[in-house]
Length: 315
Image (cartoon, rainbow, N blue to C red; front, side, top):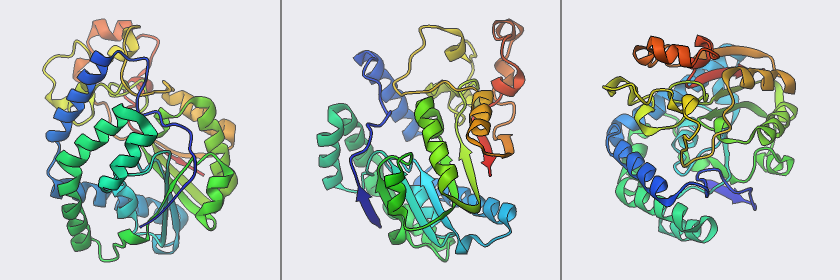
């Protein structure tokens, strides 16, 4: 694994304006969710299948082999599993994020120095409880199920993907740009700059596959109880779509609150052709759309309310 860094813009992983009690409550909910996630083996297979799907999309849409293509992941996060998984399918893998990943104890020291106490504690807890023991299983599963898996070849870059200087580190044209659960966390003006940069730097015939969690869906507020993985288990829909109905709703992460149509308008304004606009979870949460709630949300149509994670294919 190769990693380069430059001084990046501060990430949007936490909001300073949220009261400490609310931050702790949200952190506890995230911890419980993380504990309840699939085991390390199942999770590794989920990642493997997801990145295999990205390779399949590239080959279907371009008629070219993924094994001969260069892929850029935007927003690899603290655990770059997707970036590593992509190495099993693509010729070159580059991934960029505002924050460096936490792969060991030395990385934790850097996180405390650079991102402060709150982010440092989050990273420490995640690493101690999960990452330290799950990484070996992740690599074992990928090696067993992906013959060409080469995690050490992934090039991780710390910086802003909207800066042309960051792209100079990529070492050539990019054939496909990929991101999951990222674009909803970028301020609209910065997102437009990022998309403009991508469009100007994408190889001829290249594509973008991005999967933001759109604000207008039941999962769009990023409340843990309405994460897509938790919706089916809910027994009470009182707080469903609360982020659209309660002006006092807050969550300890930055959200740009773009609607599905806002994303479409932005993609078009930058100059992309939209080849796909697909809600991955269908009409998730429909059982909680009571007549009363539907009336309160009358200014949103089903296209918005059942958006959640949307896969956009851009050319």
